[in-house]
Each structure stands twice: as C-alpha cells, then as structure tokens.
Image 1 (cartoon, rainbow, N blue to C red):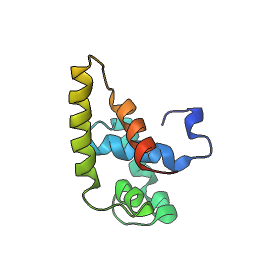
Image 2: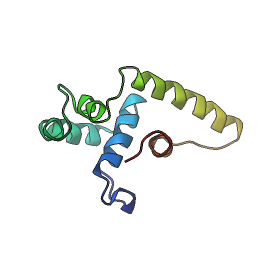
Image 3: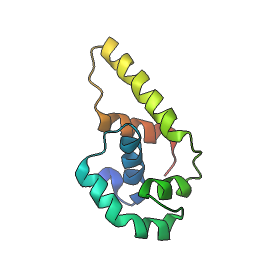
Image 4: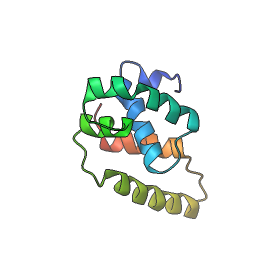
Amino acid sequence: MIPNSRYDGKPLLRLLELYVLNSINELSQVDRQTLERMEPRLHAIYGGGGTWHEAIAAALSMSLDVPKVIQDMWISNQETAKKKGVILSPQMFAEMFVDQNFTV
C-alpha cells in the first residue's frame, strides 16, 4: 500500500482506489496479494462475503454494475486525455473517480 497523507484517518479511501484499480485491471500483484490476505478482516469490518472487493462493495452498498461503470469511465477518460495530449495514469484516474463519486 502507498504511504500518503491523503489517507490519514481515511482507511476506506485507499481501499476504494484499489477497488477502482481492480475494476480497470490495473491492480498490482503486490496490492492484490495484500488485499487477499486482508479479506477476513475486511469482511469482519465491512461485511460482504467472498473476495476483498465484495467487502468494499458491501461497505458502500454498491450495485453489481459498478465495476463496468468504472471500466467505461476509464476508457472514456483515457480517450479524452489522449485527445488533450495528457497522460492519465491508472492511479490518477482512481483518485479522481473516488474523489468525485464517494464521500469518505
């Protein structure tokens, strides 16, 4: 996980960014393994069953189509960035998506 003052006092914030990265197939193997080890604790805290991302989805009562919505927005935002000559990193997109769509 990335140490950053952005996440001070907001543990769900980084988890949501990782959820977004997972949805766009940009989650690092290290983060994936860490989250898989954390699954029992995440379920105990946030509920849900199965995978770590199901626990995060349960925490915010997300609908099943949220990963597809995130994927579509990622593609659209990449196209917009490319037209403007800007590089949109997966992490930058994840931060923007979380900031614009979740209150944590």
